Amino acid sequence: MPDRADHVRPESVAPRWISRHRPPEQSLFSGIYGLVLASALVAALDATGEKAEPGPDALWVLLTALASGAAHGYAHVIAQRASAGRAATTSRLRLVLAEWPLVAAVLPTVGMLLGAVAGWWAEATAVDAALLFNTVTLFGWGAWAARTAGHGWPSSCRAGGLDMLIGLVIIIANALIK
Image 1 (tube, one colour):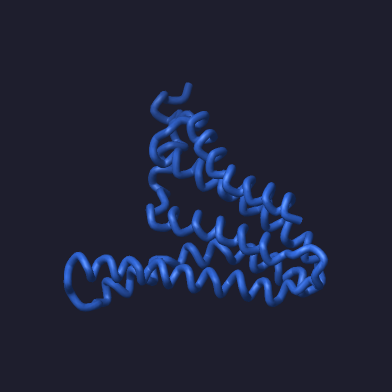
Image 2 (spheres, one colour):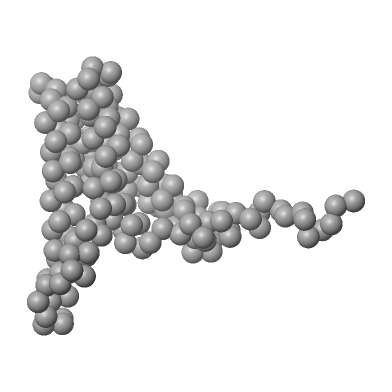
């Protein structure tokens, strides 16, 4: 008969594994911001009745994410400078570079638009896929953050559902505006 210490229940393993793989707060913040930004941009750039241009749309999504990440990081630098009254240092450069999750979060959307450039699907299909992917990812990040904070599955799913609502609002607005 196996020793009780050798038997580990999966329920007790999951919280420890999740807590060891906790995403930094800045990554969650920037990643969620990037997903919402990508969703809003891809929905806005997909105008009904206009010629589909997924290449320039992909470029706009990427450039806007880069500009947003740089602006957000630089805003941290300005705030730090104002509070400390010191010149910019390498630690302040790190504040700007710490916004990389925002840019990384838009890359799946850019990739889907580039798939339309390659002719794998229509731009409208790429937009729909990106909106769905980003919405599901918002749920996942919200639930993951709640789990790493020690919440149970029901509470984590509610948190993920609330995050997912942002994506659903963008999808609904996109459908109504078109």
